[in-house]
Image 1 (cartoon, rainbow, N blue to C red):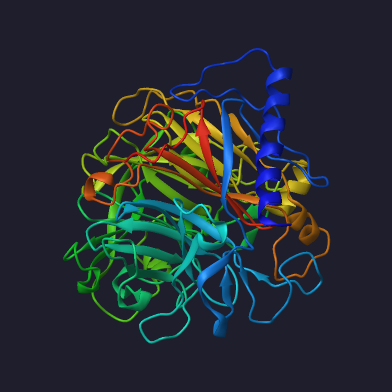
Image 2 (spheres, rainbow, N blue to C red):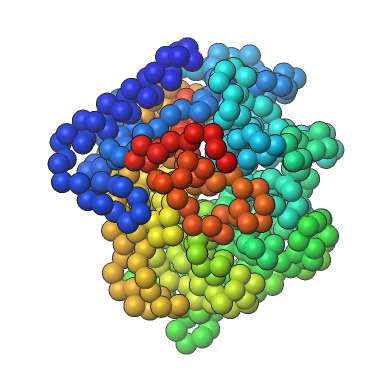
Length: 530
């Protein structure tokens, strides 16, 4: 499909679906700070489906998978936004189609007076990072390759998580692979948003090696990391096997100087830690049920699992040995605005199967509360409990101080079991005390997005090459004003995407055409003002 057709199809299909929904649902419900009416149903897993947005929202495509890179690396096949073409295969819908690279999380920054969206690419023969120039009107000139080699000139792993570290002036990239492949990489940017040192990525060994995905900075310069490694199969589901980490740097302006990598330990009611050996030997442990129960909270501690600088080490093994507490595939996290980085929310994907009978099977959203970002202790409680209809939680972003956007990555298997594609939800978080003990009722999930399935994803799901994924998934939900300073860290400001054009919302419809969208809420669009 040509560029103009893609733009027209994306916009018209979305607007028509939203209009049809608005006509069939006359009872609008205002939801928190966002003008969101519940989209009543997810799309069925059948044929090609349009995205359906809540009526107050519209979306515009800002990039898609067959856009050429302005500075392509032809030698290594890094030539397009969402494809690796090293094998010379056609870009879509053939038995030998090119290897899709799947842009993942988004980082929006205003640098040198220009508005950029940065992304790492999750699968394919090699990792790379792209930059979308949102000011460029010609799509064929919009996407630039930022990095696809490390400091030795070699390929580095594919990238899942990304954030901007204003202290080091780097994009921090995570590779979601078990040690020794996975870990954290840094790519420096100058004041104009261009890569320094030729875009060569530096492995930050002091942050360890593990299946890292979510990554965020706090205002003290600490780096919070959320790991996603699935556990072994057990009777009725899978065992918890992933950890939440915090890296406390020796020098927050230079992460190569080392520091302390810590892992989150959760205490049982009697004060003893819930350990890997306990929860993996008994994945039906009552503690897991309690942890996923509204109104309950548990003490937490950060246990140091490694100090100093060294060659890459196995962070997952070190966390287990230090009696940190594993969870069921936590994936991404963000600080709640207005809390001074004292509240960190993260998603837990769960088992992504309706056949799982273990506690915590459907995951949820957790809140870690501390007196300060650097405190060594705090409390954890469930902020939203997953269930069969709302699970596979992955990316997460605050749209206001109280409205939390959470999107699903349930996978083809669960899509089939539920006959439902993925959705994006708004959870409106109420007021509470510091320990969250009075939160006896969870927030109501309000669907703002029922994701569809484009023709390319439908082809892949129905028999495309095994190296390309099937159904579309929702990833990269991101709300930011693009401020690249410490004051612009996610969680430092109260987002205002419905009233201020400088606040922008993005998400990526991963797989298939790999389209990245910008959402406008209630008619509020970006007008170019900073």
